[in-house]
Image 1 (tube, each protein chain N blue to C red):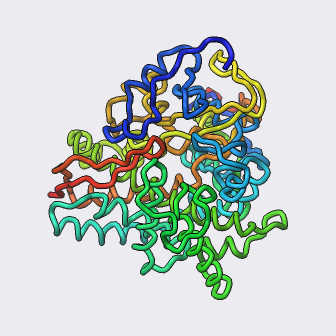
Image 2 (image 1 turned 30 degrees about the horizontal axis):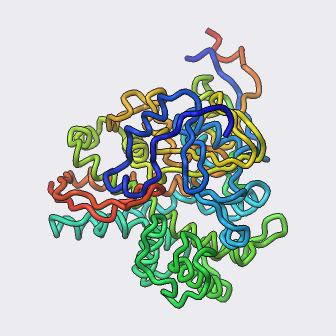
Length: 75
Length: 414
């Protein structure tokens, strides 16, 4: 279990619904078909390594980390 | 041009591309520190060949504009630019408005709903191709599948597909300097410089799109053209010119690019049977193989941007109003971004290819549709245990812009 979990957010102003986030982390991101932007599912927690990849691949730079979550993992 | 800079090897001569992408020339550009200056007609452009800088340019649209000049290598006069302006050659806020109008049709979920349709069309085409044994792969599958799928999404009747394929072929031709159509083809009376690809086929596509829009206004249906004719985004509909250009783009881009990917993918799988074996054996996922097909194919070779202000890239100073051309064809073979970039490896796990552009607001709208089509074709071939063997050389499109293949003969066998 990863100790390095972060929480994700999407900037709705810059999101272009490119969908790369949903491709890489379908449990956390979903493109909302009505708003046509990415939305974060649940608490938006994601392994840091995956999070950095999602941020890098997001075409519009709309995704960022809210805060590191030290409590996750616990071990 | 500031400080003395190295002159780039010629990569714009369309004839070069009859033998494929001139990879050795792009490799020279990637090795050369800074940016190289590429002479072109009576001016030139900064050639951006490395993955990192293609990404930087693509994701900095405030500096590297799509709306100034043109997104192709040559400049357009102001009236021609306005007449052609659509999703590709706009910046925010126009770009955002148009993109949001059309993007709902291309979200992952809405595209996934087309899986069965794509599967049925693929099976139909593969049945015929298998029965024939040896086919021109472009004619048999790579051309008809994407055009039928995009036309279904748009709401175009299936009996018009052949006509639109023909128009699209003429458009491809228009990306090179050779055109076989007379200026008045299809009853065109518009000056060619005012038409996309300078092609009279664009006039025909515009007319078709307008007739279709009229039909959808009278009889709305669950399709993209209906969405567009009804749409209100921020209280604004598309202008007539925006609709024409967007329809034109959707037909062309939804058709030509995926055709190219399916063709280069088939060629690569035929040439590297050990890679296809990995797919047959289930050692790699269809998703992985699809991403590698996309990287390998790079259907669109470049896009041009124009600087809105003086800036610096890769240590090279660029003045305001200068042309900067990002070469996806080169970025997708960048040694610093991919392990063994010249190896076709369907099992890559890290594959940050730029087949859909380098990111930024112009990231390919149809990315998920293209992926779906490639995945479905690979999946259908896998499930049938089909193997491809090349029985002829490809006939390539002489174009520095699209990586097109007109025909390539293939034998299909189980």
